[in-house]
Image 1 (tube, rainbow, N blue to C red):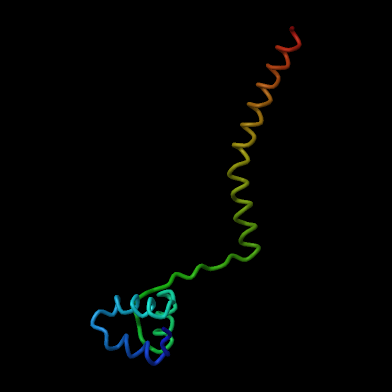
Image 2 (cartoon, rainbow, N blue to C red):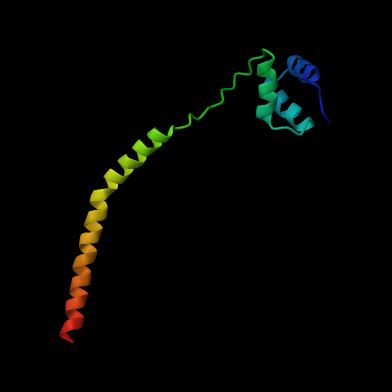
Length: 98
């Protein structure tokens, strides 16, 4: 069943439980609830629901973030390399003795 925008608005306005009405209208129209909320809000009805909008990072902000992450991990990486080199040297000395 597909309702027109006017029918959706009428059903929502006459509903006793507005929160449940959004879910019911969404089910009847085989639509997600966010789409019903958008229809209502675009027609001047406040649903009391806030949608979180993620802000996209610019390329420069992303590069700055990645540089920061690399700097944080450089010391850790250097420590691991140093440990590996020490272990590798011990293994090589052990093989050379035999």
